[in-house]
Length: 215
Image 1 (cartoon, rainbow, N blue to C red):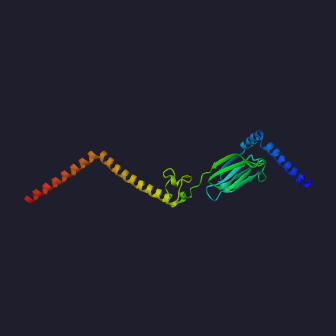
Image 2 (tube, rainbow, N blue to C red):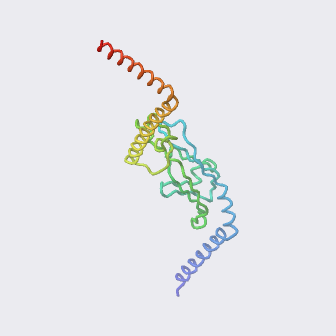
């Protein structure tokens, strides 16, 4: 083996040895426990934007991020590095409601996943603005609630409205019928008396007319 080859081999071995030392320094058990504690201080919360022209928009607020860590949310293509924060604080503005899974990685340790934070941000139910919901509160019919979180499309929404109106009409008919029954129950004696008096008057008139005809 010539001198150049020995130098290349020596350099490669030295490089691997240094990398192993660095990896051991940053990825040892003690250091990993330390970085987990650092990651546990990171907070990710959401806040509804009251000043937005579009309903159901949020700010997601990240605090406590350090230069050793970075955050990814793959499904929404979000990456947050410390360099882009204000002393570890970062605000994602104008975020719509959805499920978010934020993964916190330790960059020095081969981008090892350290912690996962899941946010279930409520979705705004835009169908609640439909004229079909006029006069119907979310308490009366859940699909008319601004923050209804079930699976909902226009067909299911229309079916729910139709079913609600049918049931409402049925209830109103039953209520009217029950009121009539209650009225008869409460005024039965008076009604019978009135019918008897009217019948008596009719009979008297009939008899008088009969007699007049005979005379």
